[in-house]
Amino acid sequence: MDRESLEVDVLIVGGGPAGMAAALRLAQLQKEKGGEPLAIAVLEKAREAGAHMLSGAVLDPSALRDLVPDFKEKGAPLATEVHRDAVYFLTRGRKFKFPITPPPFANHGNYVISLNRFVKWLGGLVEAEGIDIFTGFSATDILFEQQGKDAAVIGIRTGDRGIGRHGEKKSTFEPGVDIRAKVTILCDGVRGNVTKSLVRQLGLDDGRLPQTYAIGIKELWEVPKDRVAPGSVTHTLGYPLKMEEFGGGFIYAMPEGLLSIGFVSGLDYRDPMFDPHVVFQHFKRHPFVASLLEGGQMVRYGAKALPEGGWHTIPRLYSTGVLIAGDAGAFVNSIRLKGIHLAMRTGMLAAETAFDAIRAGDVSAAALKAYEDRINAGPVRRELYPVRNVHQSFGHGMLAGVGYSGLSLVTGGWWLRDPMPAHGGWERMETFAEYYSEGRPDPDAPANPVKIDRQLTFDRLTNVHYSGTRHAEDQPSHLVVHDTDICRTRCREEYGNPCTRFCPANVYEMVDAGDGTRKLQINASNCVHCKTCDIMDPYQIIDWMPPEGGGGPQYEGM
Image (cartoon, rainbow, N blue to C red; front, top):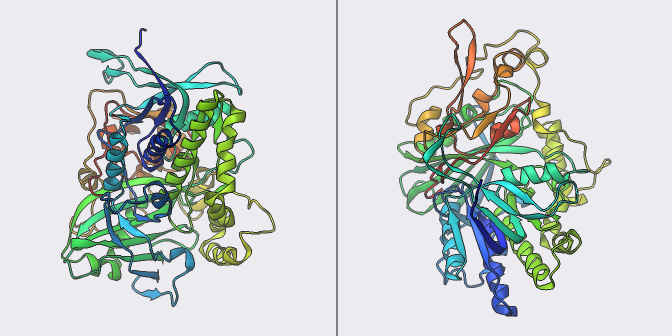
């Protein structure tokens, strides 16, 4: 098949905080050091910059301050500075405030932001430097010069367009474009499809702990303006989770009565009936939370996965012709609940490494190892290494995790076994027979039902409507289930089809097959691109791939 090709010096895959920071840093280096201008391109799968961006979000401005020292003068959309922190332990009907704010939850000097608007602003700075941002184009394949562990990455291929739902080429068919680059910087986010493929093909996670994840579900609410002071940041532990489960809630107040409210649930739970969306609805029904939302209106919804595993799960971040930055490289501080500044910092360091390598005419793995050296010598390692075992400690329950987290502030993360042993989250899920020894639950009925009133609590489909999600209907499903027979047989018997519960968007349904059994139905157009199915499927037979032409959520203001 004939394909168009484009040649650049640096290709950045993903236009989030890491990708935009990398592009902007490259532009700065060109101004500082002169020489032949580099051809730089940013590839972003969303319809516009920032459209797929979702976070809490509280921003640590340290990386932003280094990248754009005059960020206030340039109009950075920082909603409000944090003025108040509070941490509560919740029981079913009560709240208990921590007498002091644990240091990781202290946010003095940080800002509550909309990540969507922040990334859109960064994109404007990038374009002002003359760098092209190609929106609506997704990377689907890696281009190699050769195969095997020593393969050199020479770019990516974008997805074909104009393919019908049954795989047929429509009259609008356009083959994907080969974009060749001297250095490709992968910033395709948590469980990014390109990074996932690269890590597997080159064995970049050999010798590392398995990555663990969480899912964050968030709503944006409008409430009376005088109810919560802007800049108030609240975190919760406890209800509605069991002591064996990891997670907690967050409530961030912005000006004009806007509240970011959400719940993070660890994707390493044991109970096959666990439902993160239902947990979030129960959280909102708690008297403390419900009192904040009373009389308000939900205006946006979204969900995304978070890499929670920490320092020991970060893969090798370089190979010949390629670097990995941001969430794609698992740069999140799970004890601080922050990753935006780490994404930006690693994007900047990747840019500096790529710039030096191209100028020197050497983009080999040996030359690009300088990226890892920069990370190890700077603030990224200083922040992440002392908390390297924190998430793993929660595998022994909330009390053990909280206790070890506090201890790590004194010990610098030391433990008898370092790294602390861990398993992939999907491996921790138990079967019905293991977890429900006293009787098998009904897989089609929620284990912990919640009343849906569409005022405080919402069903999945209503929430999806508020995510602004749109996909072209006549295209192949971007959610590839490699053996649907497992879904109706083994999975239904052993786990009760957990995909129908861990997906926050009603993508997966078990429907009547017409012969007394049930079959899997995939509602791909509902997908909010959280990647949870790719992560938590107990048989690891689901692959999330980017859809055609910018499809997905529209996280305006999130």
